[in-house]
Length: 208
Image (tube, rainbow, N blue to C red):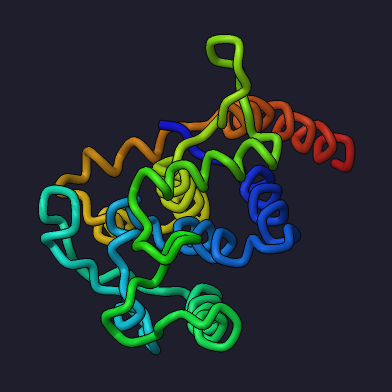
């Protein structure tokens, strides 16, 4: 399982947000990072799906293994999506009818999963989140890594695994359990606990 660290997420979002003409892609990446949607689910969204909604309903027919259901939208993403609808109408002059696609290509066609993957890969590279493959610089993370990042961030902040399972719409808790795997940073911090505890104990003994 690959996910972005918090610092990598901030770098990615900052790169997109500060690039002129990157408004649509900024909204896409923020939506993925704040909802945990799969690629196919995001490209299927219509304006009516998110307009003035506190929860997003994913149609079972559009979800993996028919795992549809409601996803709560945090305050930040609610505001971000409201702003996007206004921008579609007033600046981009796109349709904001309920049935209109939430995201479209530069040519006006509905966004596809492949197009979404290319968008995410492009911004990963621009943000310097890269690796080498076959002698070429490629994106270090995929679109699905943003879903993993969403889940990992919740786990790190103490959200119960059963709640994360419901939000991600996993059929079994075993699928969600992968997010409890310790990262390198978490293991490094854990290795210091004993030293810190011993240091505190020694300081306490000196005061007695």
